[in-house]
Image (cartoon, rainbow over all chains, first blue to last red):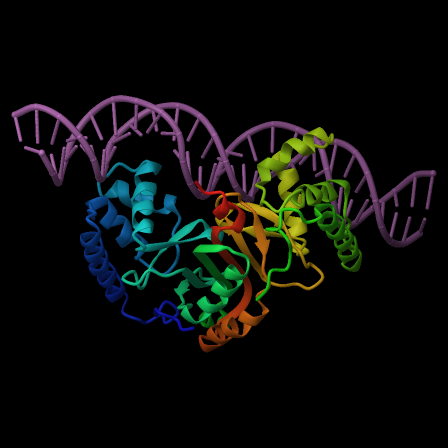
Length: 162
Length: 162
DNA sequence: CAATTATTGTTATATTATAACAATACATTT
DNA sequence: AAATGTATTGTTATAATATAACAATAATTG
């Protein structure tokens, strides 16, 4: 299992994350005959603004600034859209959303989340799938979605403890 | 990885689940010098009323019936208390709580959850811990808590599809 | 262009959770 | 038992998260 983004490396080139995410989004929308409208693109950019999961209500002010309607349904619709296409993940325990690092290959939501700085680094869980499938199969359970959250303290926050 | 309770076996002896949970709770409170007050015991019983995770607000009517105050803080306090002692787990994606099958041995929250009938069966993930620790260690991440949710359809609900 | 569908705007409200402080119950010491 | 301190519960208010329902507009298709 590997980390598949650089979230915990504070000097990574974050513009690269964002532009990559947008390129992915455009391609995936195209493939699926969906439209990446201005609102959806803005929400995707905002979610990708950092590697810290953002709540829906944290996005609303920026939508207002950009001249869009900024009532909750607007942002929830965009978040649902992006989520359905696998472009973002929802972190259940935080009620917050974060960009997906590898949307071209649909995969379960799995993150290491620092409870101090709130950074979420997506991790790759393909080597765990066999175990999950085994337990599911042994109970006749049809596995359809996974939410994996590893909570704790990242290296930086451990280092800066008093 | 194994299932550690009988949640998906609809004819298991559920009274046994509840009485076992209460015995565990009493012992664990004793060990920790905490009190299993009537409200806390009732909330634990209610959460253990089935293997379906229950939201905080679903518990309030029963508290009222039993003659307790039934404002939200009452139930959230009891839930927090039980959660801190490891007697219940919170399912992040459902904002709901479910009994812990094995509270004598503190362990991560890990469930298979049927999206149709809402039953949650706790699973044992000890064989996955090595993988989780490996990825955490490789990033200097101090792992402190886990939320593992496997969502899908249980055997019964698959069988009864049209 | 007309008809249809998808998207967005808007208002209202439902659901989940916590803050803050008062009152009561319990435990400890004397 | 009375006095004190601590833990628990009661109470009111409000914060934070999310959705329902319908109207208006924009995009797409025939």
